[in-house]
Length: 144
Image (cartoon, rainbow, N blue to C red; front, side, top):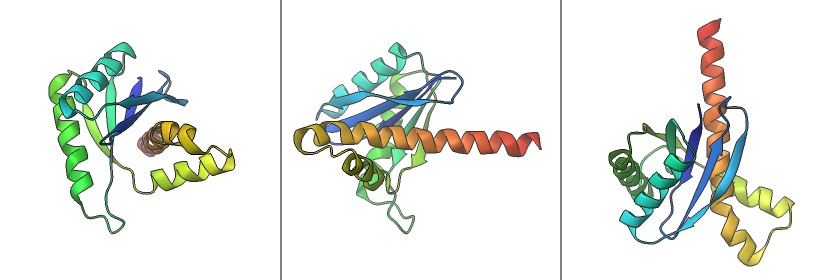
């Protein structure tokens, strides 16, 4: 099943999708939109275009696991996205993905405007990779 990951942001929202075998997570771009409702529409449209069977929205928990204002916004976005599509929407702990994404971009010497443009998409890809790994391990446990 194809799964799309969303790294929700106030101005830029990163998207990534995996192949039907759930093996390869690929970045598909950043949606630059500040209007909440239009962003929901655009992400819902992308989900339909990529024929995904599930959407995973990053949940930015605090390092101690508690929910702050950003987590509440991500949950509101996921709820609105769920209402806008027939596609199941789940939340996934995204703690430290932006830090990881920054590390990857440092390694590739991606700076300035280009970095700003891709960091959310890289974060969405990291969220999706972690979610796919969780699904693989869950299947392995169920099969043993």
